[in-house]
Image 1 (spheres, rainbow, N blue to C red):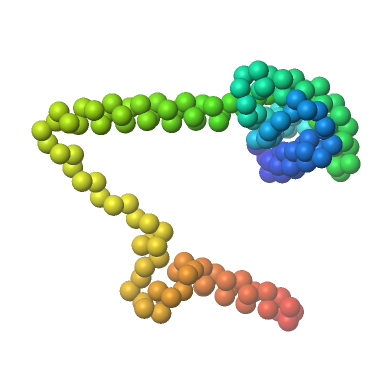
Image 2: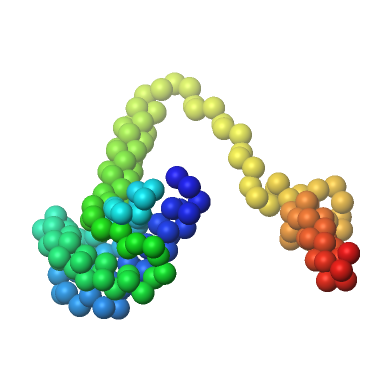
Length: 171
C-alpha cells in the first residue's frame, strides 16, 4: 500500500464517519463505528468496514440501512478534492466480537488452570517483573531523573531547533 492510498483511506474513514454522524438520520443506524477503509490503488473502489454494537438482528438492520445510505454518503464525499470518488462497498467488521470470544476462551482456560493448580504439589515459579516505562527512564544521572523526557529526546530537539535557527538566518 502506497503512502497516498493510506492517506486517502484515512481521509475517507474520517469523512464517512462524519457524514454518517451528521447527515444520515436513519433510526436503524444506532452505534456504528467506521473502523477502517481500504481503497484499491486506482481509487475506483473502497471497502468500508463498520462495527455495530447490538444483537444480531440490530447489526443486520444497521448494516442494511448503512448499505442503502452509501450512495448518499458517496455523493456527500464529492466535496473532497479527489480525482475520483470511489464506489463504497460496506463490510461488517467483526473484530470486536472475535476479540470478545478470544477473551472468553482465555478466561475459560485460566479458570481451568486455577482448578488444576490445587492438585499440583509444586507452587508455580515466580516470574520476573517486566520493565515499566518508569524503570526504563531511570538513569544514574540525578539531574536526568527530574527530566520527564527520554534520554535522546532532548538532544534531538536541540538539533532540530538549531537547524531551524540556521535556516532563518539564511545559512
